[in-house]
Image (cartoon, rainbow, N blue to C red; front, side, top):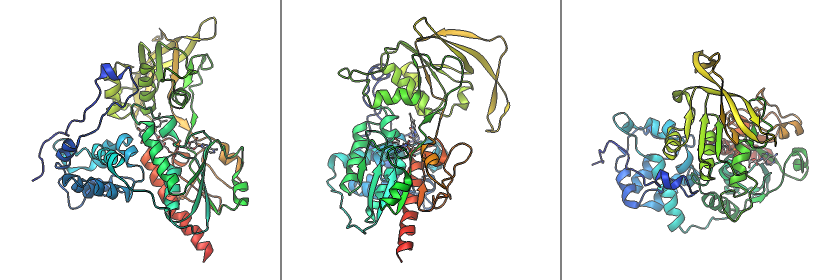
Amino acid sequence: MPNMQMEKTPIPEQKPEVRRHNFEEVSQGYTEEMARNEAQRCLNCKNKPCVSGCPVGVHIPDFIAHVVKGEYEEAFQTIKLTNSLPAVCGRVCPQESQCESKCVRGIKGEPVGIGRLERFVADWHMQHGSDKAQKVPSNGHKVAVIGAGPAGLTCAGDLAAKGYQVTVFEALHVAGGVLMYGIPQFRLPKEIVQKEIDALKEKGVEINTDMVIGKVLEIDELFDMGYEAMFVGTGAGLPNFMNIPGEDLVGTYSANEFLTRVNLMKAYKPEYDTPILDVKRVAVVGGGNVAMDAARTALRLGAEEVHIIYRRAEEQMPARKEEVHHAKEEGVIFDFLTSPVQILGDENGRVSEVECVKMELGEPDASGRRRPVEIPDSKFKTSVDCVVMAIGNSPNPLIRSTTKGLEANRKGCIVVDEETMKTTREGVYAAGDAVSGAATVILAMGGGKAAAKSIDEYIQGKVK
Ligand SMILES: Cc1cc2nc3c(=O)[nH]c(=O)nc-3n(C[C@H](O)[C@H](O)[C@H](O)COP(=O)(O)OP(=O)(O)OC[C@H]3O[C@@H](n4cnc5c(N)ncnc54)[C@H](O)[C@@H]3O)c2cc1C
């Protein structure tokens, strides 16, 4: 008999007043008992609607059935059939709009906690699993992967599993992409990402860091070096700004820079001499997950007051509900229907105030959301010493501007055939944020997987 409990089995979390002062993971994961209790809520539906909600098609009811029986390693192997980064996805995937949104249990109560179970299984495997990655014998073909984010890593892993000699070229000094430099430690511990990367290396994938393709080497040169095909997974790392006065003042950051300084330069560790200024009153502009991450990071760096400034209302915020809930619990202040018009500085050129206007919602715009309209004479100033702009990212133009025949659309996203991930340049495939614009980890992984399949078909087709 399934467990007919209406709500998800609660997951232990650090208390808000404690966690706002540390970088430890907020959610502490299920125990075996909790996991089996939650797994028993799954009805094991015949038509498996949850699977259709997963961009990589994880066999969800099958892995949950293994959890019910306490067969955690089998559950892990079931997930691994289609998802190469389960410990990551169990933590950061927006399950509420994917697999869990299709769960039948969600009609009358809360859906099964699929993400929580995925995380449990992946963590169990990390502690108890013993599999050593098997190196597949080489098939003699070389492929280059540019960018070591989830798209590139997935593509590299799938190709290595088919015997390709894969070299990943990564611009930064560490692999992982946004998983390492963007998403904070308290949501995704870096040790977990590193373990996934180490497992790929064991499979024979070579990762070359500090290699900015387009500067150190160009795609044409990689072809000359014997790589038969390329995968471009360079993400969307170019931050957008509002173009208001004061964005060049000391103390204004893009969210990317702010989070990179913390994540990669370890600003949160007392023994590190970090280049982040000591900030006390922070304004984060934006309403997505990146804004939530920046605001919650600022609190953990010791800020006394952190505001989210968002031009629409709460219902229009694109951030995950769970992230907003966590941010509120931790004391982040939300200024809805508010938009900055300028940032003001002191005599030393450091941020001292942000001037904003109040907004109201007008008619729907092209996105279908009601357009925010400025309320006349509503300007006001708030004193702050740091402003973080988290209003979106675009793909960096470096690769497309240095590669002949590689087309991009007007937003700078590389144009691909959506099924094969083939670009307009022969032998070059692309996926992830570089193609879609800023999106999600699982979509990037799905694209990397599709590209690996196409690259294999392309090379094997040439060989015959
Ligand atoms: C702060 C933040 C929080 C997020 N939170 C979530 C979340 O909770 N859930 C979720 O699903 N998604 C989240 N996202 C989005 C998600 O992380 C991205 O959609 C995903 O990482 C895209 O993967 P990717 O492989 O396409 O690109 P990226 O992860 O951006 O990786 C691209 C890699 O390519 C490298 N690169 C770029 N140019 C070059 C070059 N010329 N040569 C060599 N290497 C290059 C970059 O250094 C980077 O390592 C978040 C994003 C941010 C910024």
